[in-house]
Image (cartoon, rainbow, N blue to C red; front, top):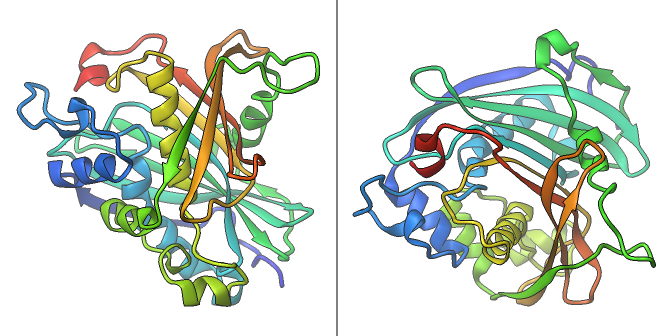
Length: 310
């Protein structure tokens, strides 16, 4: 099987969606992140979205693009591999957001075809809200290397930036220098709750029969839920307020989280080769093996106060 020629450059959208307080609150509550910034509608600024909330309004475009551009035989082989989110501002209740999805690159890798889709979201004034490079591995599928010109797609740095996260401070044995760690329980029903609250539905996360037919032992937690739990833990342990300005969040997914289980989020302060200070993190599964690597969270160096707190 091969990725069809001409996939890179395929664009769909825009899709316009209304963001209300109910959706914002439900997403945070599904994660157990009950900070007032996410749940208290009496705040003068209103409630804001969790940093990973963009996955909610991006999901319909990701599904539509996959369904329209790929055969079902190829589409079902997709695994979320990398995530690179540039957060220009948080989603707010009352937002009317417009999202467009474009396939910006493909390249062959050992497990299969690595395809990156860029999801760009703007508000009614045309101002950027979020930009995500969503990397998928299509297992056992071949492809040619193709990249949209920078002038068309903007600089695609997903692979390089995630790789740069490996240039962090390490212990003498090569493992990351850990400043903190926290165990996060993953209850049996979390995938079902997350599915409904995020409005992200993929049956391998909620339907045991479908999961087993896909070769899994049982249902697994969404990768974006694992990332969101890790980000909540990182902000809490780093002493950063939920409404603080966040410029970027990146990671690689390297394993699956069964339900129920307990994950361990490890974090440390680090500096990249570029000089940027980051909150670095990784997630270990119940067996101690990483299920999320090269996580990094970059705070906004300078931002509009309203965007950081509204």
